[in-house]
Image (cartoon, rainbow, N blue to C red):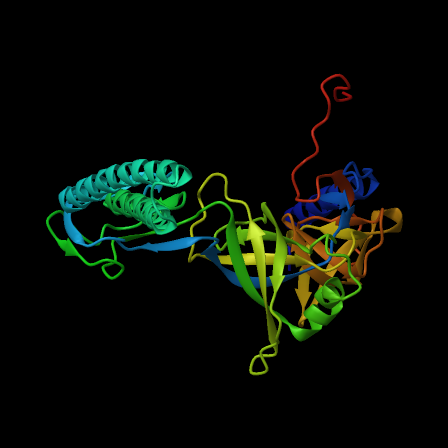
Length: 390
């Protein structure tokens, strides 16, 4: 049995506990309701986009020269700036000119000899004409003098031609760049003998502009290129446009134009060979490089663009979260198009002026507090003249 003192202590403890519990129930709640999370939201971008198809091609030089000597002889000097750009007419090799110089001297001497004989024939012809007019000599004397004068004049012409040929041979000993472009490796060195038209000396390729060759499928050819080569198309019609980029470029920044379409289709691959011209003023492009080619296939059209980071994947499907009524997120399936200037074209699923969640851990049907951001997720700067409200 419990004594009176214990019962008294237990009763007091229960009273205190009940009083504390009553105070807690009567105290009003002071914790405010949780605010929806702030999420970066942006309005989709609507921009004119030209439809295109991408291909991989290769660059080639518009002009390419494999330089060979026009005269035989020993190389006396090599002044090839290997790998550098040279202007047309730049001196590259010197073949020993002494043999050609001697031939020119001999041809010049024969010309002087022929000219002297021609002067004598002219004098004899004039004398024969005078004597024939005075009836001192017979007609055959004048005819002989006329034939001799014609022969001497022909010999002068032949001697002049020989001098010209000798001068040309002498000029060929100075091997110069026939085109402007980037010169390759010197394939012969000083002291080597080169044969006329046989021994390769070096190569030169033009670098501005360049040709880009690529193969298009038959569907693209028939849809976008076949009409441009119709017999009814004017010769000065505008050529199809392309944009070219190197394999390491993020964007297409080099414009070009189609200037050649093959006259046959490759039945083995079902493609048509296309050639485009692209300018290379800075010289960064070089023949032989692979290139990405974007061929325009139609007129510009207004398209919806968003950032790839706003796109989610759900069992192979692509979706975005659209900010709907009362700032609640909605699940929306989308059909993706190509990438244009770093943004993804949305073929289906979004309309202009709609807002989407740019990034963040957000679920469909979740209420959020929209935070204005650019389409790439960066915050939109507030002009300093407006300031922020306290």
